[in-house]
Amino acid sequence: MEFEWDERKRQRLLDERGIDLVRVARIFRGQLITEPDTRFDYGEDRYISIGKVEDEVFVLVHAQRADAIRLITAWRAGRRARRRYQARYP
Image 1 (spheres, rainbow, N blue to C red):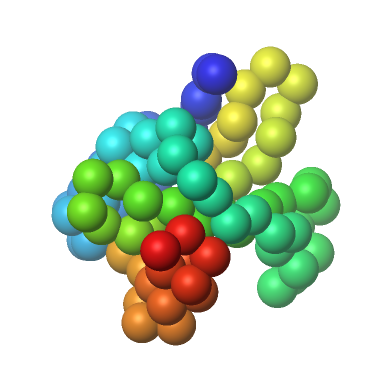
Image 2 (image 1 turned 90 degrees about the vertical axis):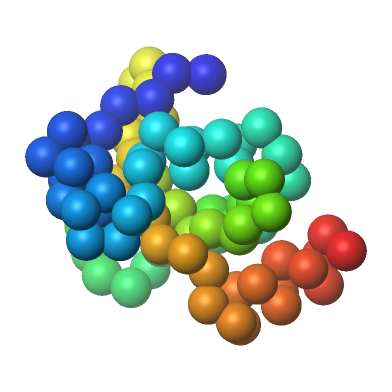
């Protein structure tokens, strides 16, 4: 599985949230909850996935490109997202 991202955005997430998109991409190795991101019209199909890396649950926004998954942004899951994930994957 190939990934791509905007390096400036990756650095900003590291600086502001302490989150590395490369690390969060590891959610694709495990169990996921994925649904379309319908919050806005982005001009492309985007998805929101909730998954676990080590003992931490993350939310990752991504898009499928021709030959890679584009990692857009990520954050630590809030209480509702964590509960949803843990209910599906106890």
